[in-house]
Image 1 (cartoon, rainbow, N blue to C red):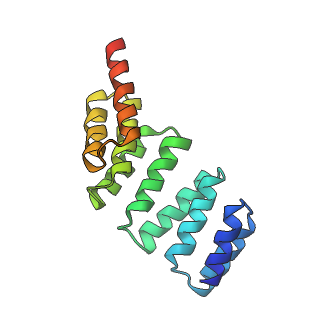
Image 2: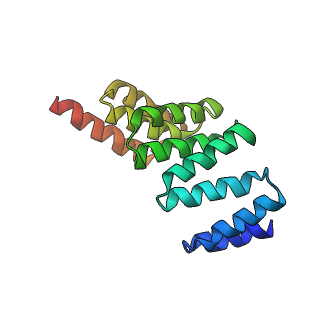
Image 3: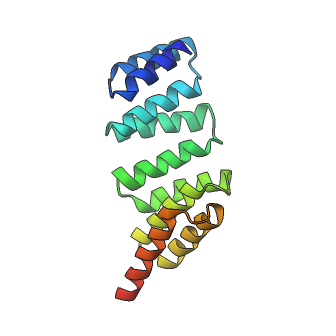
Length: 153
């Protein structure tokens, strides 16, 4: 736990020494979800998306295949960094299947559908996120943006 905490402290400032602490945590406990997840997240936030994906997949394959946040982050990496909206939507769907009240996953999957030009599926997801979190500002903005796009077509 100390290695994880030290890693988190360094990660907050963007210091790559955080990775050394996470590696030490893995030496002590090779199946540590926290160490793998924190390494993946550090890589994700610092632009090394391939390493992030690798660590997220290690978690799914060897540690916890039912963690909604891992699938959400895989979706985020695919959406935000790789612009692979189809794969991102697949990852968000996995997160949603694990938590039907995951408003953020509905919102992001809706965005992926919007970017793929599937406005009707996007609207369904944006509305689903609003049902979970009424007046969800990001979902309201997304629906307004979607309506503007529909009027242009």
